[in-house]
Length: 83
Image (cartoon, rainbow, N blue to C red; front, side, top):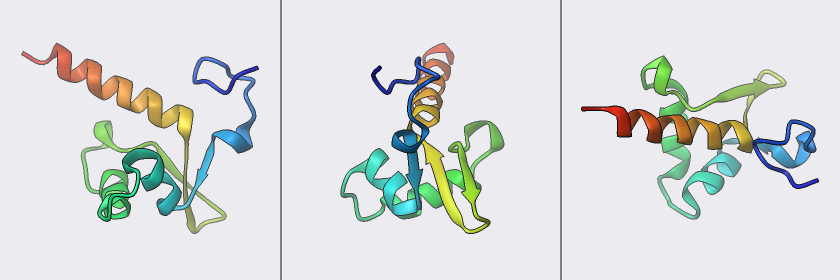
Protein backbone atom coordinates (compact mmCIF):
# COMPACT_ATOMS: atom_id res chain seq x y z
CA UNK A 1 0.00 0.00 0.00
CA UNK A 2 1.38 3.49 -0.81
CA UNK A 3 2.86 5.67 1.93
CA UNK A 4 0.39 8.57 2.18
CA UNK A 5 -1.03 10.76 4.95
CA UNK A 6 -4.41 9.09 4.38
CA UNK A 7 -2.97 5.61 4.96
CA UNK A 8 -2.50 5.08 8.71
CA UNK A 9 -1.09 1.58 8.15
CA UNK A 10 1.88 2.91 6.19
CA UNK A 11 5.38 1.93 7.27
CA UNK A 12 6.46 4.24 10.12
CA UNK A 13 10.16 4.03 9.24
CA UNK A 14 9.56 5.39 5.74
CA UNK A 15 7.46 8.21 7.21
CA UNK A 16 10.08 9.22 9.78
CA UNK A 17 12.54 12.08 9.24
CA UNK A 18 15.45 11.95 11.70
CA UNK A 19 17.38 15.12 12.42
CA UNK A 20 16.96 18.73 11.39
CA UNK A 21 18.98 18.08 8.22
CA UNK A 22 16.50 15.47 6.94
CA UNK A 23 13.50 17.60 7.89
CA UNK A 24 15.07 20.62 6.15
CA UNK A 25 15.77 18.61 2.98
CA UNK A 26 12.15 17.41 2.96
CA UNK A 27 10.80 20.95 3.33
CA UNK A 28 13.38 23.12 1.58
CA UNK A 29 15.52 20.92 -0.63
CA UNK A 30 19.13 22.12 -0.63
CA UNK A 31 18.45 25.56 0.84
CA UNK A 32 21.39 26.68 2.98
CA UNK A 33 19.00 28.22 5.53
CA UNK A 34 16.65 25.23 5.74
CA UNK A 35 18.05 23.74 8.93
CA UNK A 36 17.78 27.06 10.78
CA UNK A 37 14.21 27.45 9.52
CA UNK A 38 13.36 24.00 10.90
CA UNK A 39 14.65 24.96 14.35
CA UNK A 40 12.83 28.30 14.19
CA UNK A 41 9.53 26.73 13.12
CA UNK A 42 9.90 24.07 15.84
CA UNK A 43 10.43 26.48 18.71
CA UNK A 44 10.17 30.19 17.97
CA UNK A 45 6.71 30.57 16.46
CA UNK A 46 3.32 30.57 18.17
CA UNK A 47 2.29 27.04 19.22
CA UNK A 48 -0.56 26.84 16.71
CA UNK A 49 1.91 27.44 13.86
CA UNK A 50 4.76 25.22 15.08
CA UNK A 51 6.21 22.54 12.92
CA UNK A 52 5.07 19.14 14.25
CA UNK A 53 8.35 17.77 15.57
CA UNK A 54 9.37 15.61 18.51
CA UNK A 55 12.58 14.44 20.15
CA UNK A 56 13.62 10.83 19.76
CA UNK A 57 16.02 9.51 22.36
CA UNK A 58 15.97 12.87 24.09
CA UNK A 59 18.24 14.61 21.56
CA UNK A 60 17.33 13.95 17.95
CA UNK A 61 14.73 16.25 16.42
CA UNK A 62 12.31 14.15 14.37
CA UNK A 63 9.14 14.59 12.37
CA UNK A 64 6.79 12.46 10.33
CA UNK A 65 6.40 13.34 6.66
CA UNK A 66 2.66 12.75 6.93
CA UNK A 67 2.34 15.10 9.93
CA UNK A 68 4.30 17.82 8.11
CA UNK A 69 2.08 17.49 5.04
CA UNK A 70 -1.04 17.82 7.23
CA UNK A 71 0.55 20.84 8.97
CA UNK A 72 1.19 22.49 5.58
CA UNK A 73 -2.40 21.82 4.57
CA UNK A 74 -3.68 23.48 7.75
CA UNK A 75 -1.42 26.49 7.10
CA UNK A 76 -2.80 26.79 3.56
CA UNK A 77 -6.42 26.51 4.72
CA UNK A 78 -5.93 29.08 7.47
CA UNK A 79 -4.36 31.48 4.98
CA UNK A 80 -7.26 31.02 2.54
CA UNK A 81 -9.83 31.60 5.30
CA UNK A 82 -8.14 34.80 6.50
CA UNK A 83 -9.98 37.99 5.53
